Image (cartoon, rainbow, N blue to C red; front, top):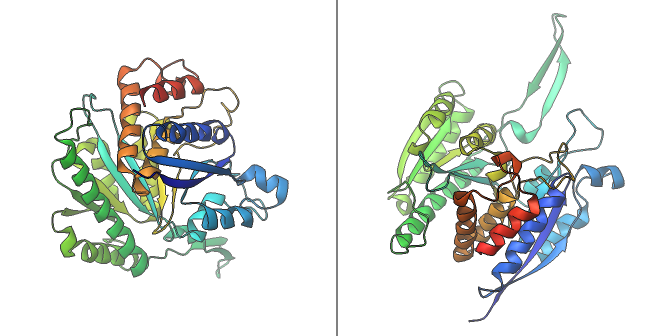
Length: 364
């Protein structure tokens, strides 16, 4: 069988991103020894450190290289300042816009041996909502002080494509579940059929969230999604139920802000952001991105948990069409976590980053 070749951009970014992205590269190199896959790599600058050095957090050359040379990428972390810095904007937000990565896909799952196993995916619209960053501050006409306003933008186009992505993911998850039933090595799911939960606040925001709800329901009513159970959840109720009964959810689709909040909150259900992967996905490109930040408090100490990056590498492979490679990565991570002997400090262990990476590689 001819080997399939992929060129992967590596964007370590800031902080512990520089410590965990090499783990993703080593995973890919190890997979190429046992599967008909080959990978080449290019390391590219981006991040707050790059901004301080060059005056731009995302050099045009980085975007050009990703567009012209790469099929996918891994992004580490970024140390965005909490205060306004003239000329600075988040490079990962810019990448999402410039590469049209309209979906942020975040699986949240426990190990299969957990007392209350969780296996869900949050599909977050990535390009609009309040994150269009169109804000203004002005003085109130009555002299009572300043007023700040922000635009919340929801479009039919973006709502349709994110709902379609959610439906496609739900069907793919079901296909994987069905094909895994005959494999003794497969990780068992808690779900028996595909379901998508549309999250919104249309009872208050009838125009913006009302449009998202309408288009999401319409998109998921297409005949190709006829196997999928469709339900809705108001976002505040969604937060409550997500924490009370996370086992009830398979795929959750939401506008940008709600998806952002639900994603980070859901990470608490599995114990650590250091376990949770994500992928920024468009129609022709994917960036795997661990959900943790740059963690300056542990930078350089070898304590960063590489599991989120390793899982993000597997997620990138899944969206590149390499489902068997993605399955092997997740199985190796599952084996590491189930055994529980080689864990980083955020998981209650004492192992260094490199020791966790070596344990997962051994299982691959």
